[in-house]
Length: 331
Image (tube, rainbow, N blue to C red; front, top):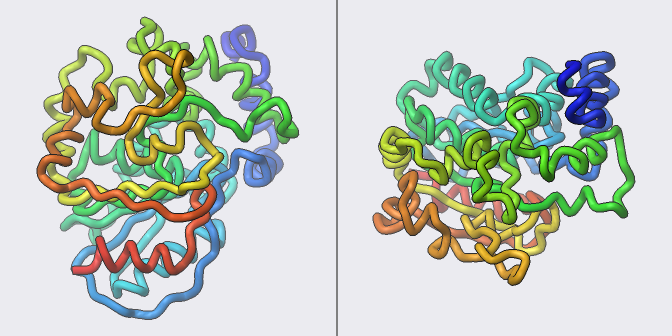
């Protein structure tokens, strides 16, 4: 902790508070401007049949134990008449909320994978969807494990391509619980410090367009490794990606939670940022052109589908969710 204190006093204070008073910290995170809380939906009625169970994963500040994620998971299972569960990274609402910040991306994926492996109802494969950064966990599972396989993956406002900014932590935003202060301090030159990458989930998918060629990004960023932006061997990741039959990338057309929202469709900031700011399309990105982890291969095989809903970050409607479930998960 001394090393963290010297490196980032604000992040140190954030970690210390989470350890000293976890309930207060979890409450503050849930109420912060960064919280991506899933909406509550109705109970749903059986309208179709699926042969596969469903797994869900939640966004930052949210929890599988919150009413929204609980209702969405149950709704999906009831609509398609299948077993459905939300897999948390913590054992209760307090730890599950805190770990959405203070358990790094790779470790969160490992916890998710262990839970999948331990559930006999998922042994034959499953469909999965996440909200916000929950999709990073599912995407990471597909990349690193995918056994048992995710057959169909639906990413709702997923930050799979990374995020270049957290607008809700702008200088005009009230600093609630110290989380924005910590973000402001470390999501810059310190973002790709190995200690920060080992602690903060959000640092792991922070992709600063002015630092993507820096040695610290290429050596330490967990996202850079997943995206194949380093020189590492990606053959296993590509084999794992190919095991999934369908990918559905859902974007909110009024999403202001993260920038660029086009990243939800695998776009990214331009390579000459900040000279130009218009995001690149998926087809213009290095990971698509180089097919670094299998995204282009999947696209050419017709495995990628793209959906857009009208609204803010993960604020889709029950009608939206029902339509996606029937279109992509029923069979």
